Length: 467
Image 1 (tube, rainbow, N blue to C red):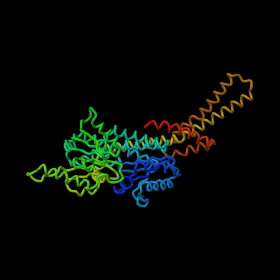
Image 2 (cartoon, rainbow, N blue to C red; image 1 turned 30 degrees about the horizontal axis):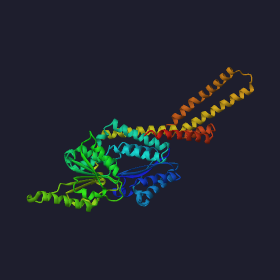
Image 3 (cartoon, rainbow, N blue to C red; image 1 turned 135 degrees about the vertical axis):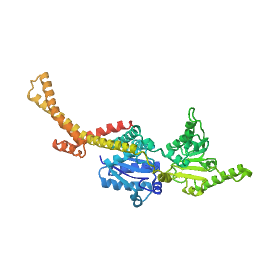
Image 4 (cartoon, rainbow, N blue to C red; image 1 turned 90 degrees about the vertical axis):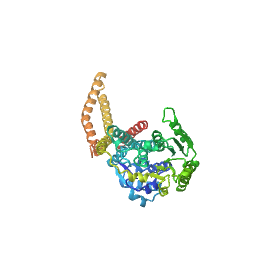
């Protein structure tokens, strides 16, 4: 195993850099394809979320792999390599496994303990499988990461240490007031119909908003989300779809706006929000009449997109508008999670990393052991055939007994060494035992490689149905 991960996240890079480096879905596909075409890499997977971009690869050379992966990230992100390099982090072999397992458990998230990262890891694996860039190593790694993440959430209280970005963002907007009290009877506008936007819509519906308007570039997805929100037995919230082209007109009616799209440019400009604010203020003044000018109900914006959907200049529109985005969430997420739960999850991660490494090292020697036993079986057959030629008068009963006896002798001679070598191979530094076996028994490298390919094909086929 020569696992290498190169990436950047909210922990290593400012939001301005993450924003520029964000990869659209098409760019992620091209990055995977180009990584696999590069000489040092035999497998590849991309984990891209609103606050991280990571490229995983199985490489045969560390330095060549690092140079190639860094260059590819820079090319596909559109950020120059010289500018990007100071923000990149690199993990190799067991440290790379430890990093992904920590990510899966929510330990590396902006809000510690959030569970949405598991869905994003699953999507990353599915993309690698669909494009055939994830082989045995990355299939095993990402599937185990999903199991480790689920174990952390089921065996510890890490869920109490933090919330999803949606919940955390709404809590920031509510400014200390319970979200359900703050959101009740307000009108909400949700822009986007992906997993994050859908979660936001469901959260707002449970909080008791009066109405949710959903806008999405693909109208069918917006309609599907509205259907889910209004289906019998759900929250009973009123929901409707709106055209993306009608956002400017819809803004004035929205008390809460949540946006999370894959757009490469701004969805809501400061001018659009300013115009909506002016209209809301005029409506309030008209309603107040002779009692005074009145004051518009504060309008809340939650921007969960990367790159951002809402113009940062909205911050300058004053107290009637409040914007919480990825950058402000990063600043506010220095809360103190429950230390005992975090420590327990870290222990789980360390144990699982050790177990994964041992399993991978043991699996590395299996083709050599299989090839050794196949060679021994060939020797047995050859010697039995030679004996039959020298003793043509042997009866069938005697011939069968001699064959069984020779096989038992060979099996007993090989049993203890092969069991022991698998145990040793599973320990740190045990990778050399496969080479020692091949050298001692003069095994044909092509035979061992053929066993490895057969095992890979079988594992790959099983892995694709085991997410």
